[in-house]
Image 1 (cartoon, one colour):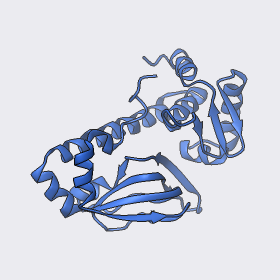
Image 2 (spheres, rainbow, N blue to C red; image 1 turned 180 degrees about the vertical axis):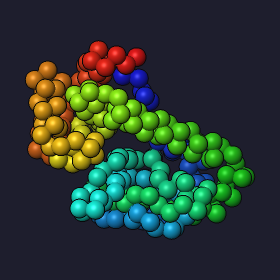
Image 3 (spheres, rainbow, N blue to C red; image 1 turned 90 degrees about the vertical axis):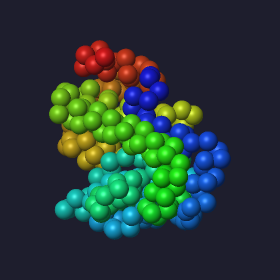
Image 4 (tube, helix red, strand yellow; image 1 turned 90 degrees about the horizontal axis):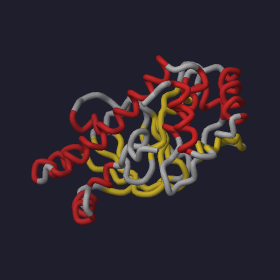
Length: 225
């Protein structure tokens, strides 16, 4: 599979070790336990948050109290970027997945660093644009693709890149809510993909047997390039 089509490079991957050290010196660390909230939707705390270790999930609580997951972020990824440049409050709830360490850099400190060394602003722009492209791919899947290819595409997007195992750590009901499907429709799509031996359902997760095979099937089924 193309390395960055569905898996954007993390912010820190655009920086050298020396640049990361200078960035780290401008922030403060916060250690979190599994499930602990990092930010809540509507918070007004301008700054850039970077995952050093562990992971984070982002999402929004619906009116019925159901949490709709929008993404998982791993080491090196950042969030809260738009609060650095705008007055818009945080748009999602963000919580830790497993033991997690977050580096928080206040917006003014980051902007000062970016003014002195534009490489930091360039890195953030590249990482943010790549993630925006993935969001467009999600929108395309929701609006344009039939049921089973739509689910296949979301599985490709949500599957972590190597060296992590190709496993989507979503319960079936959570995945259905994220894509906007009923549980029955999600079960029908996953059953078909499982019968094609493209995925395997496990307790609390869905394993992609071969990312390349699933992508090849998606291209054939949807006509995507």
